[in-house]
Amino acid sequence: MGLFEFIKDTGRAVGLVDDEGAADRLKSEIRSLEIPVEDLEVNFAGGLARVSGKVDTQENREKIILTAGNIAGVEKVDDNLTVEREAPQAMFHTVERGDTLSGIAKKVYGDAMKYMVIFKANQPMLKDPDRIYPGQVLRIPEL
Image 1: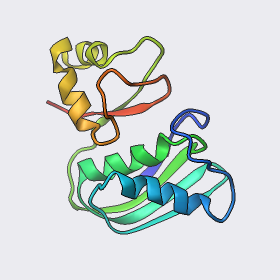
Image 2: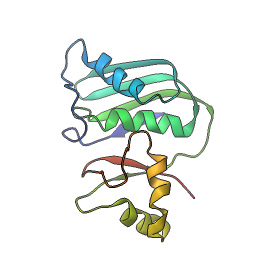
Image 3: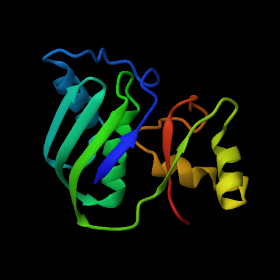
């Protein structure tokens, strides 16, 4: 649990503004990825998304945090999710201009061919290993 920061003006545009429907739109985006979560609750105001519910793994917790944070308009995610099986948190990497998954893998793992580890760790948020963008935050799991 904690507070995670993101680049507010970067990410998928779903029309988040401080209105009644913003939290529902954000919750719908999370649900659309079919990440297993029970009792998902989402609140949104002033760039802050608060997420709560119950997930089975740390990986699913991180995917929900990143799904919310990689939406345009979200500046911070307050994680109040509970996890059945706690595990160490993966490293997060903010994509910079010119980054590729293979370049990130080379920096982190010492082997560019490990890019698929990063790609798989970020599915279903990522659909294509060649489609990442500056400001996007990715999970970088330990090998």
